[in-house]
Amino acid sequence: MYEDKTLTCKDCGNEFVFTAGEQEFYAERGFQNEPQRCKACRDARKQATRAPREMFTAVCAECGGEAKIPFQPSDDRPVYCSDCFAKKKNQ
Image (cartoon, rainbow, N blue to C red; front, side, top):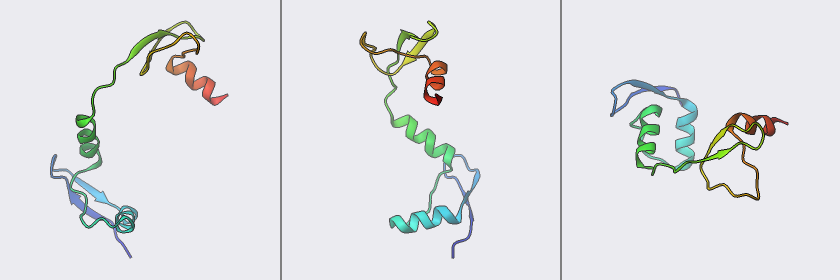
């Protein structure tokens, strides 16, 4: 029923594809208008409206390296750097 459409981003002027699947999603949600911005410009616009996150520095409980985390560390829970956290998550 739907076919891919090529649209032009109103911010950067680049062309982007409004896929049939996206059109179906928009129709299911009752959206009347097609998107006016490409994904990169939509993401940039979302980031611009968000407040910057305060990052805290802690010592990784696994390797002893520096860990940057978005919360205040406490002594009762271990903190891991991104590499060690990924390893623990996959175990």
